[in-house]
Image 1: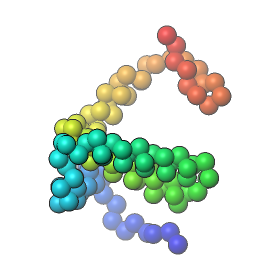
Image 2: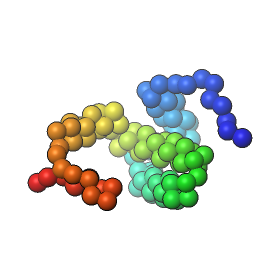
Image 3: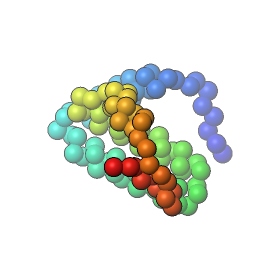
Length: 108
C-alpha cells in the first residue's frame, strides 16, 4: 500500500527538518562525515538495485534516502546543496556532446 503524503514541504523546509532531526541525534559533527559518506554509498547501492529490479516503490524510497544522506553530509562539511547544484548546472548548461548507448559524452 502506497503511503499518501498529505503535507508536502519545500526542499528548503525538508532540508531544515532533516538537519534538525540529524542534530537531535548527534549526527552532524564534522568528524562523522566519513561515516555519513559511507551511508550515502550504501543508499546509492540500494537505489541502483531498485532501478535494476524496476521496483518503483523502492526507487522512490531510495531516492529519498540518498537525498537525506547528502543533506546531512553537506551540513557536516558546511556546504549548501542548492549552491552546489547551481554550480554544477553552471558547469553543464552550455556543454555539448552526444549520447552513446545512454551515456552522454561531452565534447573536449
